Length: 444
Ligand code: ADP
Ligand code: K
Ligand code: ZN
Image (cartoon, rainbow, N blue to C red; front, side, top):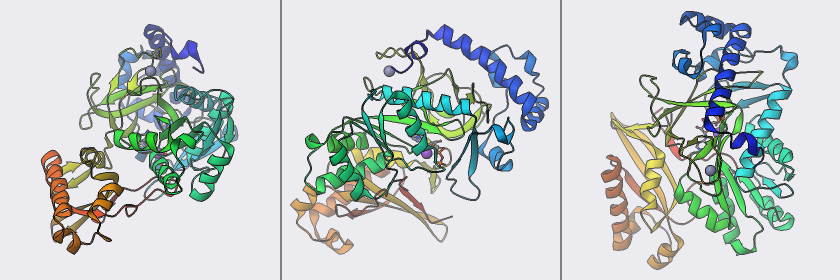
């Protein structure tokens, strides 16, 4: 562990630390951020009257739109000169979401990422091949700072240029890699293409995050790169990657570094706090941020929490995998669909790989969803066809049966009909280094 005394703090002590810090942060934003002063006045919360966590549900939520409305620096709690760094998240439409860090915020950022890397198996002296994008995106510099704090040798490769990445991994022999799960798939595949076996690779651990992934992808990456991969979770609004990380021992949920980030899970419709184990929207209050502290930030990410003791010895609460975002939910003919649900179905079908794309169109008033999915190399070889056009699939009983099987499973499990298109190995979109867009919604 990077900070064993904090990471194993008994839960009652953790709680009283959170209580104290919550009172401080509410007073701090009331004093310094006009937006929060107005909001807190509106709901009649006097900072001095905050008793502790019991008053958390009385605090207002902060939404992504609040950040956008105060673009670029309107929510900063310190003068611009005290901001040591700016980051921004990609933002699918319009202006990006801008965040700032004081020197101390950067120190905390490095500490929580160092904790995350250590939880993932990394140790001082190991080499990190950091394939997260550098720049405004928090991934690259975030992992970088944490690895340096832990005492690793960092290779700041950034995303893209897969040929070069593959060469550097073979030549430099790093023990740890950090990137998006979809890019780890790309790299695993590239090594396979070149006949480099996982045993020949120096990699031992992979720290994967920034997009949702499932056990299907974990299996593929672990086997393909010869690693034990763990999930890293975070968002720029809260600090960046390193809000939470799985421990490599258990890999059953990600420990949230809750001395800095106070988590809640709330009902997506009512905003009411939900008990442990119930799926809802993850909400964070930053407890130590100086430049841009946020109260009850609505992440839009759906998951659950558990404070069951973990064998690794860390006491910090664990979050489950992100089951979707309130905003990447697809509504297809009235049915709510998350891409991860489709992935879970594909995991059950041995003839296909978890390489897929969902395309949604509107024909007249009806939604039409198409699932394009790759068959395995083995299956492709057995079938012996050169291409998998609609005609070929219609004519070949094995292909035809597979297509029907997938469509039926999707319909049975998710409750929505999808046209299934089989792709030959290598034909589904791959990550070029950043996030992979697995959904193409042409209705918007
Ligand atoms: P953007 O992705 O918009 O550029 P961020 O990099 O801050 O901005 O992204 C944060 C979001 O990325 C999270 O709210 C979550 O939806 C997603 N994310 C980050 N890490 C993970 C993870 N390990 N699993 C699933 N989703 C993740
Ligand atoms: K992200
Ligand atoms: Zn653990």
